[in-house]
Image (cartoon, rainbow, N blue to C red; front, side, top):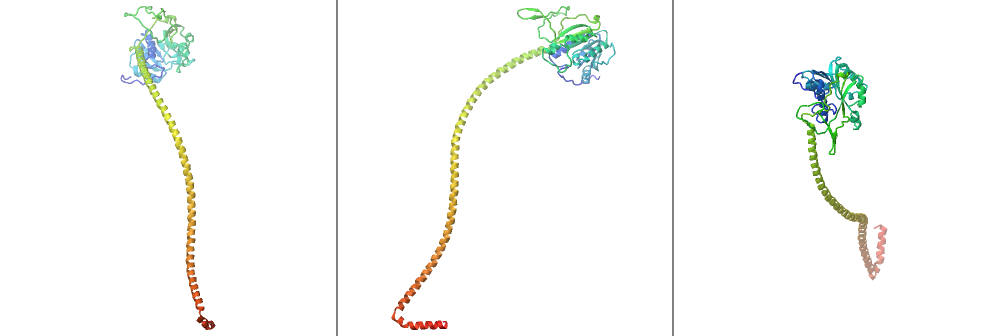
Length: 405
């Protein structure tokens, strides 16, 4: 592989550890591989289900040859890209239930946090494959969650785990192929440590205490969160007993840094809480003032509503009066129209009466003239001379009637 080629990206899914992820998961995974180095020195080592490949690379620093195998092509590509240019190191794709290697090809097989990811029927197949590729006198290092501590007591279910095991179940699985075992327990601890400046001494160089201000006693180590088992087919294949306790801390002391950060964060959060409480007090006082203002506003609104009720009642009375006035106005207008019609008719009749009177006056004058003429005639006729001329007047009138004149 080209020395400058970049590794494929590999996201942390919450289960498979990827270097760079801090916290307990880093301690757990790195510690297991650090613990395995004593059994890998000068050996042909297989890291079965190697994941991101960091553990295989660590074992390769002391092994004669280290091969990592994983079923995930993306994980293998990532491992090759990041670590593949180192000596005595190689990565292959393959399943732990069908390893792509010859019989007796390895002296040590390491498989951490693998068995629980297999279905129950596949777990014996994986162990049989480990036995097949392991040379005589070789050992396996296997880890597995302690189901009682990991899941039952925490009421927790890991969605990536297909079949977790209790201790006796793991023992029964190992019995047919790896009957000889040394058991270890692993769990992250928060404790105080004392150590000498000199090199490590004998196997009894470690002591562990548990207690309180009242009394202390040698620590009674209970079941850990994980089992770590060194197993072999033959009893003499098991390595000599090592130290009773193995400790691991990353070079950056990240857990202690995280604890300090958390403590500082608690203080910061406490200060924020105090500020919040002071703010809440101010807000409570402000809310009290607002409530008083709201109460005053409600009183004003009630008074306004009462005033509006009076105004609305007066308005309704006015509107009713206006409506009645409009009705009366309509009636008056109608009566006025009728009066105008009658007046027009009467004016016409008056004009006619005036014309008739004028005519009557004319007739009256004519009658008066006729009466006056008649009176003159009568007066004339009453004179004696008129009586002497009367026979001649009658003869003249008759003569005129006779001749039609």
